[in-house]
Length: 318
Image 1 (tube, helix red, strand yellow):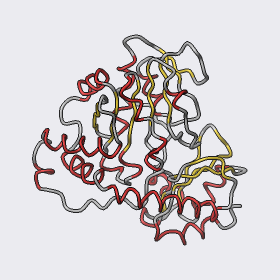
Image 2: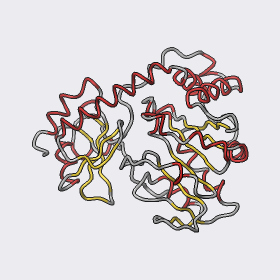
Image 3: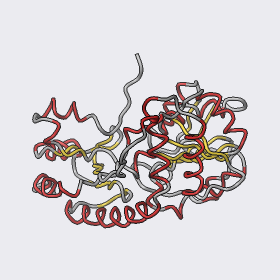
Image 4: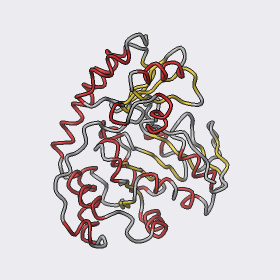
C-alpha cells in the first residue's frame, strides 16, 4: 500500500466530516488560480489520435518563448510536475545516495527520494552534492538566490508557483548543466486537471528524463491547451495583476498576521490551526493546515464570485 501524504484538496473528506455537498464548498486548500485560462474548443484529433510530434513541438516552442529558455537548455514536458518529481532520483542516483531538501517545503520531493532509498538531509551540509529548492517555497513563499541554487553538483528547482513573478525565475541558469527547473502548468493557469508539467535542463538530463517517461508523456488535449495558453502573453500579464490585487484583498479580509505566501496562496499565524480550519469549515470554506505546525493556516484565493462566502466564514476567526 502506498504511503498517504499530506496535500491540499481532499474536499470529499471535508464534505464527509462537516456536511453539505461539493457545490456548497469553497476550496481554498490549494494554491490554484481560481480563474483558469479559458480553454476554448479543441480539435477532434486532440481527443482521438495518439499525440504526435508536431503537437509536442508546438507546445515546447510556446514554452521556450514564454519562459525565455536559453538556447543551450532543453525542455521536457510530462503528465504534471509530479511525474517529473518522481523521476528526479534517477538523475541523481548514478553518483549520489543522499540529497539536501530544506524544510518545511512541498513533501513530494522528499517522498520521491526516500522511495528511491536516498538519505534526505533537512539541514545544510556542505558535502551534499544534490539539493532541491522550491522557489518560491510552499508554504512559506521564500525565494532562493542564484548563488544558493548553483552551489551543488545537481540543483533541482521547483518553480511551480514562480509564474507570478517571472523575473525571479532561475531558468537563465539551466544551460549550465546540473540545474533542473520544474514548472507546473496547473497552478498559474488554473488547470490542474490538465496534468501538465515541464523540466528545463541540460541535454544529458533531458535525455534521461525522456527515456524514463516513455512515449506519449502528455495527452493530446493537454498538448493543445498548453500551447495555446503559453502563447497568450497578454492573459498571463493581466492574471498577474489580478492575483496580486486579490492577495492583498485576502490579507485585508482575513485580518490575521501574515507569515508567508505568494500571490496564489497566503500563510497566516493563528493560535490553533485545527480550530481555525474547523471554524472556516462551518462556513463551507476548506483551508490547509500542516502536520508540522500547530499555528499555520494557508488559504488560496477565492473565485471572484465567492468573496462574500469567505467573508461570512472568517467572521469571528480573528
